[in-house]
Length: 169
Image 1 (tube, rainbow, N blue to C red):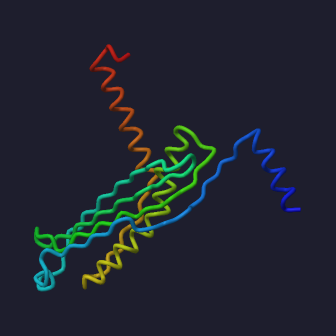
Image 2 (cartoon, one colour; image 1 turned 120 degrees about the horizontal axis):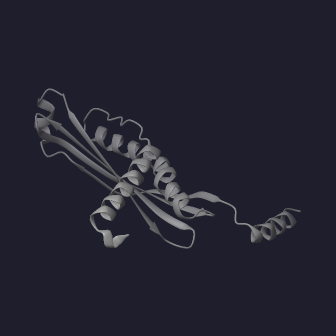
């Protein structure tokens, strides 16, 4: 019975491709922690300045398989000195089928990092507390807004290039 359903579904998929999105694996690709001040960091009043950097990189592995790496770097300074720096490259392998162009770019740059971010945040918090620093709970990130900003910036850059060089049009 299940085989008949699968065969019927496969036949109907031949005429139209359905959207598929699946997590294959989530993993830490790289993790780094540095505390350059050493024990001196614990002798100072804890009023940290926190800087967070976020990047994503996507690599096509196979026909519908993509590796997305979310790199999250956090630098914490006390009185202009770095108390600690932690960086995680949180990776994920995702199957994405039935999407093309802007829809595919949107899924890979918003949905995938949104899934990876809590894992990266937890890895950073765990390493920071093991380094004997106070827990670091990073705020959520709106990846849709970041993607919209990046698309708008790319469009502005393309328009600016078009105006600078009339031969481009």
